Amino acid sequence: IWLEAQANLKHVLTEQTYTTWIEPLKFLGATADTVVLEVPSSFFQKWVTDKYLAMIKEVLSAITSKTYHIEFHVAEAKPELPEPRTEKEPKAKGKEKDKEKEGEKEKEKEKDKKPELVPNLNPKYTFESFVSGPSNQFAYAASQAVANKPASNYNPLFIYGGVGLGKTHLVNAIGNQILAKNPKAKICYYSSEKFMNEMINSLRYKKMDEFRNKFRKMDLLLIDDIQFMAGKEATQEEFFHTFNALYESHKQIVVTSDKFPKDIPGLEERLRSRFEWGLIADIQPPGVETKVAILKKKSDMHAVNLPDDVALFLAEGATSNIRELEGMLIRLEAFASLTGKEITLSMAREVMKDIIVEKTRDISVEMIQKMVADHFRIKLSELKSDKRIKTLVVPRQIAIYICRELTKASYPEIGEKFGGKDHSTIIHSVKKIEKQLAADADLKATVEDIKKRLFT
Ligand code: ADP
Ligand code: MG
Image 1 (cartoon, protein in one colour):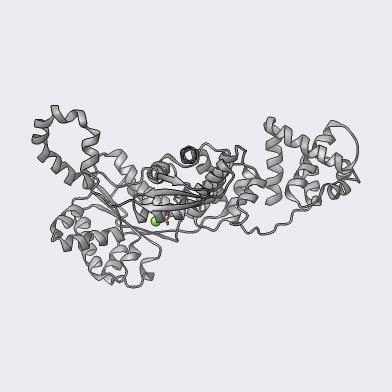
Image 2 (cartoon, protein in one colour; image 1 turned 135 degrees about the vertical axis):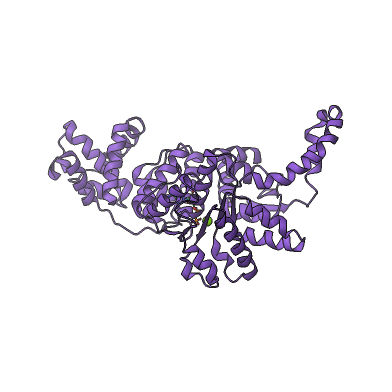
């Protein structure tokens, strides 16, 4: 079952997510109700538990129609590097023994260099994959300006905004764009925590010079979430010197934070004032339109059809945190893919029922009737009548179908409100539209359009 589950997960997750988090899980066995997986580390376990456990369980229960517990075992720490190497290159061993010896020193050097030279940017975070809207336009434009002309006008660039609003995405986009233009550019992206941890390690192993030199060689330094340096005096001190060295040699620095510099408690005055030398750009929580645009973009990127009414439903139900919004989309996509059904509003309602506490925008049968009648430019009385002309029958069936989908009215209740039709007529209409929707794109667009307008 694990193989099958993996195959399913591969469909619904991005390739990167899959290879990073799912592929390394090793199947150790299963009992009647528990699947045991090996994880490489406890950090890994935590991450997978937080992000993907629900999905793994869903996949398993979709395959087996049973609910499984997942048990994780952390693999025992073993010296990993040397062994896989010899395994991977068994043939090369004999022939290249001599070369290898010669090359060894070279390789050592390379190993030391590599982590510095290969920028640790996330390739998915680009300007192209970023949706700009009123809430983030300023930060977006500033980031592009910096990427196009580093270290000229806006140095440092300080981007601030709440959690999940796209700061990390934007700074990576700056790096990726500069790198695309100049593959040799020395760029490093560091969270302020990583900066601190590395500094502490360097202190411990007396490698401070190395640490300093590394940063001072950079063309572009991206420091994410500077607020974590608050109260860490030694780290701030070190960063202050790094900052000055780079600034003086006209290298670009970009810093992000969840707050405006003045509002970060425990940030030293001299750093604060440095941040104010450049440009400070904010990201505000996105409005519904921007959220819809982001959902549309992400679903396009995943090659999934996300109807407008569903996008609106998610956008309205989500908080402003775009990471959460993405999470909803992934969940919905996973559900659709596992059940082999197209994404619809009613599916979204069902899948999100614990997540989105619907602002009950009660849609009534009357509202639907009016909306449909307006759409087709017919009279309400005609819509409810028994006249069997095509120009009336289709709108009538559509209206009945939407009533069934969006209201809690029963078949007889709907019949009652459509001029006293019996419930088998109503069922027939619903079935008819359901069937046609699958084949008729125009009809589908019409229905979606009407539903969308009902929600706005
Ligand atoms: P922050 O660093 O501000 O907490 P992130 O940059 O990590 O937020 O963004 C969270 C997620 O939302 C990321 O996956 C990112 O790609 C996505 N995201 C945020 N803003 C946008 C946007 N405007 N367009 C597309 N994706 C976005
Ligand atoms: Mg971030």
